[in-house]
Image (tube, rainbow, N blue to C red; front, side):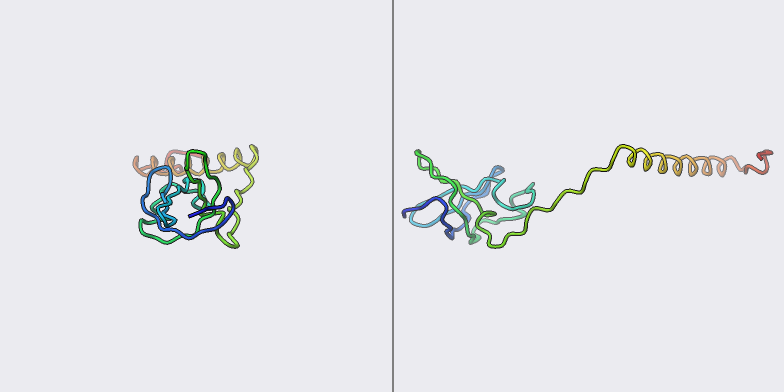
Amino acid sequence: MQLEVGSIYEGKVTKLAKFGAFVDLGGGTVGMVHISEISPTFVKEIGDHLTEGQQIKVKVLTIGEDGKIGLSVRKAMENAPPAPKRPEPASFEDMLSKFKMTSDERISDLKRSVETKRGSSPSKRGAK
């Protein structure tokens, strides 16, 4: 089988590895999809996205002089959704303000808990 870089082919997943998946394109031609080319979103476990024996479409990215074929599932997807945008990081002041608020709430809860365990309340101790 004569492959062309940039062309899309259909193949069968033959083996999953930690770093990618091997795909049989037919005629004894096997290529590899690197983990970064499986999905437009982050892939932690390849088995969550692909299974052995699954038919998939792949795009040929590279054909090395040594015969190794680099494939991509995400680039072969038609109208693939863009990767989700990360939210803007909060400013330092916003993070500090949130920390102060949660810290004050926790301290209040802790004081209430300690007072309840002692069996006293602020009014019994003469607190103003």
